[in-house]
Amino acid sequence: MNTPRINLDGVTLEMMVTRLSEKLGWAAMAEAVPVRCFSHDPGIQSSLKFLRRTPWARKKVEDLYRQIR
Image (cartoon, rainbow, N blue to C red; front, top):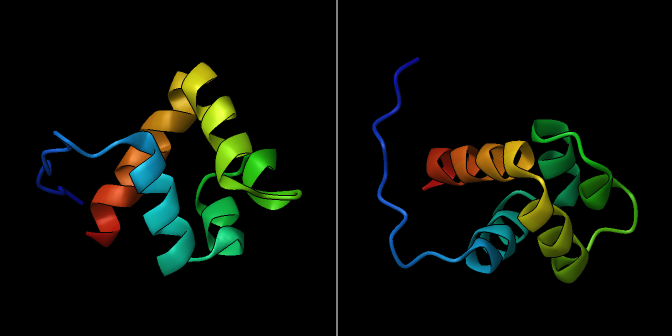
C-alpha cells in the first residue's frame, strides 16, 4: 500500500508519542511497534528516551503517526 508522505515539519517525537497514546492506546502501539517501552510500564518519557536512541523504532513510530493522521 502506497501511503502519501505526510510532512512532519514542526511535529516533535513527543507530540507523536502523545497523540498515538491518546488515539490508539499503549496496547495498540505495542502491537504495531513491538518494543518494551510500549508494552511494559509504558510512559511518554521512557518511550522518548528509547526512541531517540533507536532509529528503526523511531521510523516505525513516525510511519504509524502518518497512518493515523
